[in-house]
Image 1 (cartoon, rainbow, N blue to C red):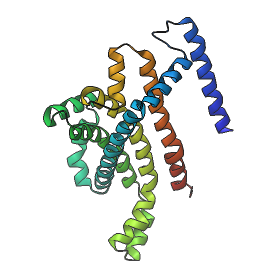
Image 2 (image 1 turned 60 degrees about the vertical axis):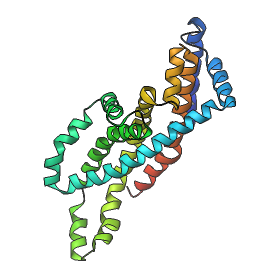
Image 3 (image 1 turned 30 degrees about the vertical axis):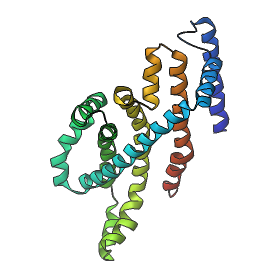
Image 4 (image 1 turned 90 degrees about the vertical axis):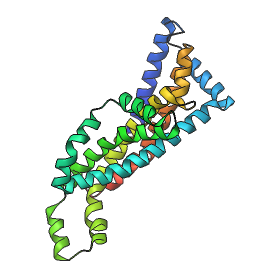
Length: 244
C-alpha cells in the first residue's frame, strides 16, 4: 500500500506539472516530456552519467570522512563532560556557519582543488553528525553499564556489545541526515569551483537559461539519492530498530 500511495502521489505531481506547463512559457517551465527527452539525449552522449558519477564520488568521499570523524567526536562529547565543555561552542559556531561561507573559505585557503571541495563538504556536515551522536552517547543505558562493570568487560567487548548496539540507531539517523545534506552541499561546491559534476552542469545550463536542462539534471540526481535512501538507508534503519 505504501508503494501504491507513493506512485499515486508521483502521478498526481506529474499531472499537475503537465497541466501547468501547458499554460506556462516553455522556456520557464518545460513539459515533463521535454525534460525526459533532454535526459535521454544527455545520457546517450555520456555527459549525464559522467557528471552524476563524479558528484556521487564526491558525496561518498566527503560523507565517509564526515561520518567517521563526526561519530568519534560525538561519542567523545557525550562521554566526557570536559570535552563537551571545551568543544561545544566551536561546534555550534561551525554548525551555524553557512555552507557557502565554509565553501568559499576552503577554496581561498586550499585553492580551487578537489581537496578543497571534499574538505568543504565534510566540514559542513561533521557538526550535525557529532550533535546527533552526542545525544546518543549521553543516553546510554546505565543498567548495561553496570552489567559491563560487574562482568569486567574489556574495552573491545564493551564497545562491541554495549556501546555500538545502543548507538546504531543514532548512526543511521546521522547517516540519513548526512547524505541528504551532503549531496546538496556538493552541488554548491561544484557550482562555485569545480569543472565537472552535476552542480557544474546546472550552473553551465543556468548561464544559457536552459531550464529544461537544469530541471533534468536536478531530477536525475534527486532520483539517485532517493533510491539510495529507499534501498539502503531505510532498510538499514529498520534493521537496527528491529528490537523495538
